[in-house]
Length: 123
Image 1 (cartoon, rainbow, N blue to C red):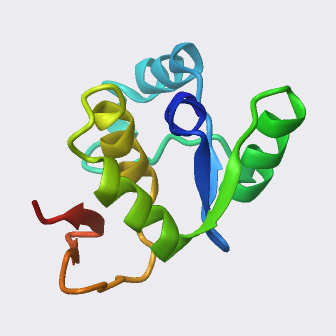
Image 2: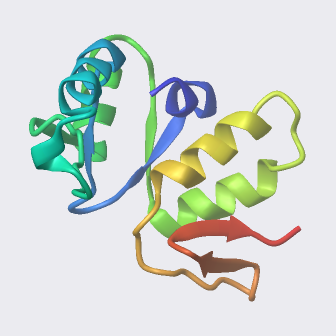
């Protein structure tokens, strides 16, 4: 959320749910699962089952008084590429790229690639 606010925009992404899991609840779940003989060698995903889409989150942030521009995904990538050298927003661009994991690859002038599910900007 902070990165989208600092960038002043967010990507319009369909079907990309976000879950916000509080660390105190997540850590409690880990402790409860830890060292149980009957759960040995099992994998557990600790998530919040109540999700929100990036689009809905952007709408709520805007309604809270932070003006955000909604951009289609390729336009959002163009914006990030144009600003990737700006030290004031570089960290927020990287955070936004991580939030965009799983989106379809976008190739614009061979500058963007999809690598291991993370969109990367070739600089």
